Image (cartoon, rainbow over all chains, first blue to last red; front, side, top):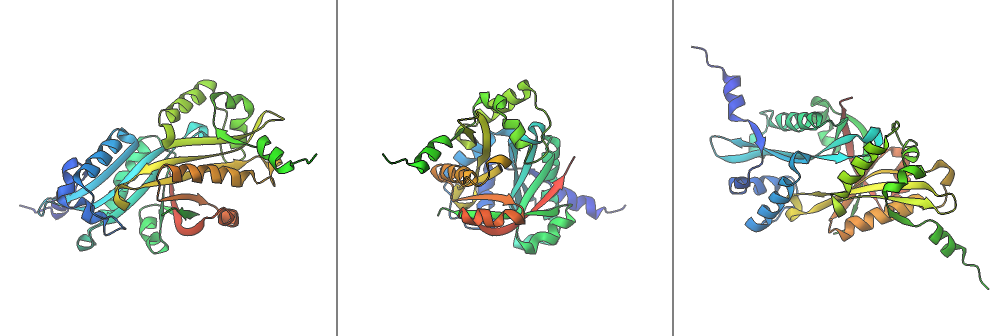
Length: 157
Length: 157
């Protein structure tokens, strides 16, 4: 009997939407690998989860759970911006993509980006965009993105 | 008696939120100076206007109307993204800023950016971001922004 490793890997690392129980599976700790994210209380998490859920398909956070360890090892989000330009078009904005440092090299980042891009496309967006550091440019090019503009920022805190 | 021109100019070019009647004041034609925006029907405009209005302060489109001509001569938008990172922080995204080519040099762009940035700050955002071409970098630096990342894009249509 043949052993189909790729299929097994595929099943093991499926992308799904964030669930409220994912806080106890290391979701916040994973985000801490991306940027500042101090401890978030259960109530804060629940409130934000429900705020985002109320936006339905207009704001989706996805995760990959390692079925063996039960830990969240990759995540990313996309929200759908509604515009007047492009004949009242829509744009998908991908944000907060991170893969656990112990789970690199398994193409999990690509899976996350594909899931989020597919969602934006299915929502009728004419494009999907994201901001990244120059170091991550090559990765996103492999995902089918091209560099276009520059990102400007003003911090308040 | 002193004539305070700056105050008169200030009154003449006040920033306010988009109104449903602004379609008849050249709002769509102004957006056409920014990018592709074919004719939008009254129904399409009304539907999108109401969709955005339902988001309340989480998505604001502002305009400047020339009180003399009754035309919309500048616009921009900001929407508030709710995150888990930064302790369930919020980020303002500025989009679709344009000033009528016949109304340049009156600091209207700065007024629009100040209005949108102030809105993001008042909503509790820890930062406000925007994507722009390299040619507009200097303008946004004058508005208090700094270059940070690069923007990547994938077009569907």
